Image 1 (cartoon, rainbow, N blue to C red):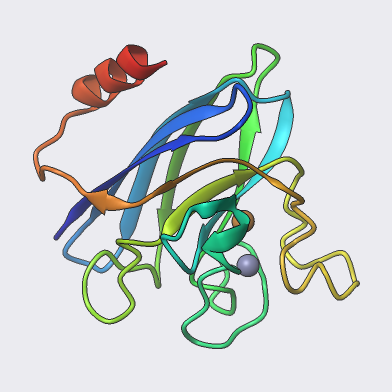
Image 2: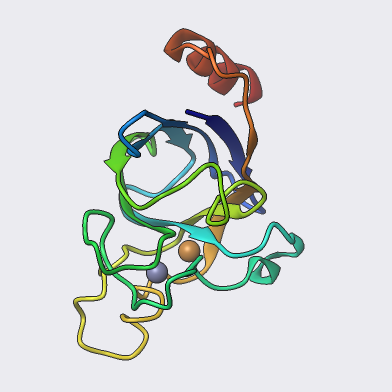
Length: 168
Ligand code: CU
Ligand code: ZN
């Protein structure tokens, strides 16, 4: 059981807060909110490095400790960092509520210290039958990003909402 948090921002208006919680069955739940995005779907991934010296570019490629191809968040064969899409409404706002397996907050495949990133384009989940689809899902440039850090374990949804409203 572990809890992690990421605050995402970038060079544009996009902004987000995501909390990760693992349970005893090895499932991790991601809950978060985003604002300042264009309506529609935006790809979400963990990238390998927590290096933001060159904005999102120095965060490297999708976190992929098992040497798989790109895929959707509910597939067994995917980059460990593939989290699918965030669905943004007409007001540029999105809520994230995702439960995934094969994703870790502790141990050798822990994502803590790596970068969470939301992208300009929809992630095609590896289904577009081109080379880029199997590498990045054609999600395009990074819009907002942040390094995943350790969070207090008993953070409530109300506290998360409050944090989101404070920074936003
Ligand atoms: Cu990405
Ligand atoms: Zn990927």
